[in-house]
Amino acid sequence: PTYSSKLKVVTNAIDSLVDAIKENDGIDAQYSVVEFGSKSYLLNNANDGWNENVNVQKIELAENHWDGNEAYAGTNYEDAIYMGIEQLREGRIDAEKYVIFLSDGLPTFRNTSLGGSKYKRNGRTYNWYGTGQGDRYYPQEDRWQTEDDKNVLTCLKAAATEIKGMNCTGFYAVGVGENDDFEPVLQQLLDNVGAEEKLPPMTATNTNELEQAFDDIKSSIISFMCSNVTVT
Image (cartoon, rainbow, N blue to C red; front, side, top):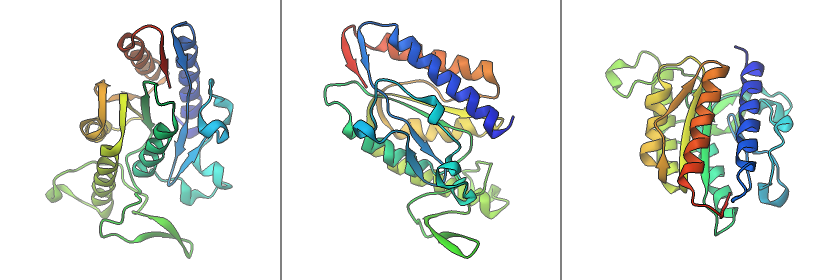
């Protein structure tokens, strides 16, 4: 599937999740959406990024937010997690907070150098690190075949360290696409996040699987909550 078709499936799943939560009178929910590529982007800056609805029509491919600059098309888990932590801090103090982390790629960029160099493209130096490439996860160095194999592991280490600072009621991780390494990579995030409620990492290669993943998340959130609570 193309990036655009995957994006459409994701936005439909988000719409369905929001509608399902609205049907529960005891839930007073607000939402904040952080999009990310090489860097992160807050979908709606109004009200500190928190709103009673999600305008899925504004969700775009990450590089489109930077005039189509392909240098922003990598995958920076660490920056997304950092902005997610900031958004959780801005949320209502009395609210239970749930995070859905969704990506269609393994981590290929990071904010922390970890001995690396800043990314360069077409003569310009950007304020992040990594090669921007890599689609395999090899935790054992002796299995590395390319520099990109090392890059994925290094970027994942940065993300796993960053997410230790995230505290929320529930955390869910979904990989979109045909990559067998999504599960072990996303498990690293689940192992390090401070959350009471978690589901095993989920993957989706088509519309039905993504809808099922969001149905599982919806069921987990609703069943975990007590009635008449404020959720964000």
